[in-house]
Length: 156
Image 1 (tube, rainbow, N blue to C red):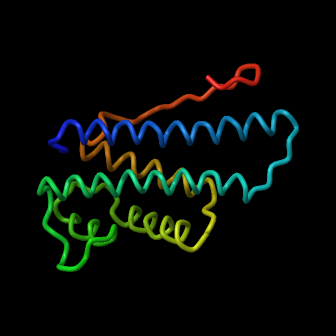
Image 2: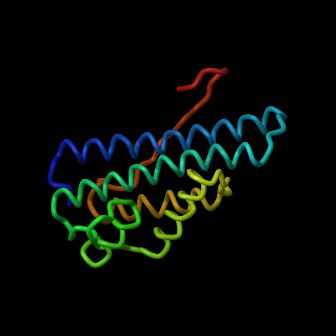
Image 3: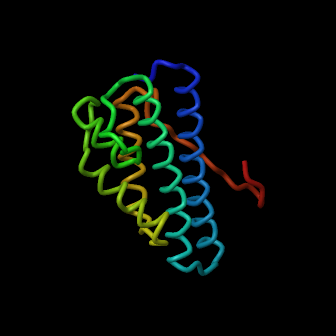
């Protein structure tokens, strides 16, 4: 759906980074527990919340690109924020679950601006939902799988 190939490649690259950071957090968490470390739940959830904030930034950028390509109407005058972009695109883009994405956007807002820590399971649910939307809009070629492996103390 994104016409400009350079913009589409940028979204794909950024989304791969989201999935890589998510894999890094997951791998290091498992590795720490396996090594007998005690990690505080807020720290782990905080790491996942940062990935969630990044994931929604990629999603918002995708909406901005699609808006610039006239894939949906302009938001009402004076409205330029994330919520306005979502609402303006609601009837024009093939949304899979607009309500879930709206809920996730609100959680992201509370995390980014209100210092709320979002539980890991919720972060992953929203990140997966973002990916489904991006695939549906053909901004991504398909689900992205990223692996992050630690071998003898070295990340690969």
